[in-house]
Length: 515
Image 1 (cartoon, rainbow, N blue to C red):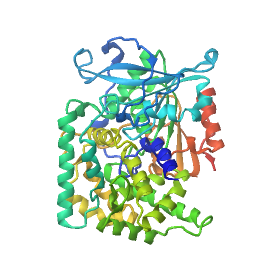
Image 2 (spheres, rainbow, N blue to C red; image 1 turned 45 degrees about the vertical axis):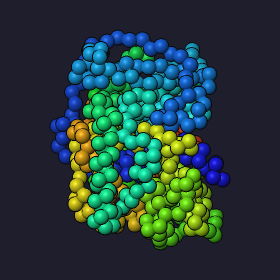
Image 3 (spheres, one colour; image 1 turned 180 degrees about the horizontal axis):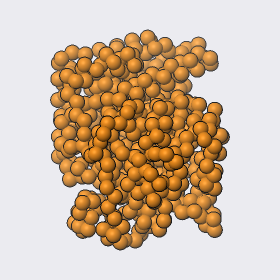
Image 4 (cartoon, rainbow, N blue to C red; image 1 turned 180 degrees about the vertical axis):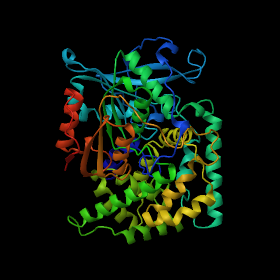
């Protein structure tokens, strides 16, 4: 069971994690800083042609610990993009963006390229798209399936901050300080992490924000030879897609936003909504568990286990211990999909009996740690992109005042989510906005799919995204389900509606509901 769990969770780790920006709710302040102007990028950027070749195995930075290259259907190329779009024609100021694609199987009826972003921010498209390719076989009939490592991720100038040994210690350390001494230690660790990012990746840190990634996507569209951007965005990928639609509304083709980030939420509101989302998912898990098992954990039991682990970790694997922080991340990771619920039951039972291996493997997946002990750039890229985007910086004192509010939202995850707000404290780069502008007047219809049981991107985010895109742009679809996102849930209603739109241009009826 343990080996199977390791393989299962590693494939989905790129979807994001507890305390990231993947779930949010709030009303937008006036934010002129987020309203970027559309420069004539096609005229400013040197022309280029892609050289497609057989793909090498994903690198450790992309989560490629298996060492296996994608199959013969896949080919890879490198897009050369301006590091700084304010100076787009500088030949010495560029960044390489790694691309992967599988060509459409029905070339006679090919629509174009379908570009995927699987979220995070920080997920590697190079590693993820081939891993989930079977889910997109039907889409591949008429599209070249394309994905990429966004700037600051994996092979595209991936941000690094600490070495593997240091990251083991960083993620194991207490992330929910209950004493002044532990709070001081947390603040010092965050500062050391930020300093490491500046030391190892200082050149790219100012340029890894979402607006630059959206401009990379438009350059990608042009170089791929597509008049329109056909897009499949998941989780943070919906925010990236919204920013793209704002910057280039006339270039939007057929687009799906699945597992929708709330673009109106600031970091506090995002983290608070995510705490509520994971609490709801935990409640739903426990309710479902009692219908099939007599060995289901209760919330007080989980809280007591985490408290004990905070005082005394238990053995995990390879000489590493399961700490409270790693266990909390592992529990959150298991709530991303109903497929992991049995592992959560087993992992908690094992931990109660002094065996931390399964929860540790789940926590490692959340943090981007491979079975070989190497970390991908998942979490360091997430930090860098988030802090390049959002201008808010929170002090420990400000967070401490909000802890009761978070604890009320989720007795299990509240403290963890509240203290995750330290991620940009002391960051060496200023953020670009308070919240992103995703208004896209005149864009083609965007299919926005919200999942009522989504822990990471709570359901309310889909409605807010639809409102912010503007009148006549968003088409909303609701999935009454569990887990993060909807298309890959196996629900035939969702898949049928999405496929009909992306393949045939058939827009679902307004406010369609799938159960």
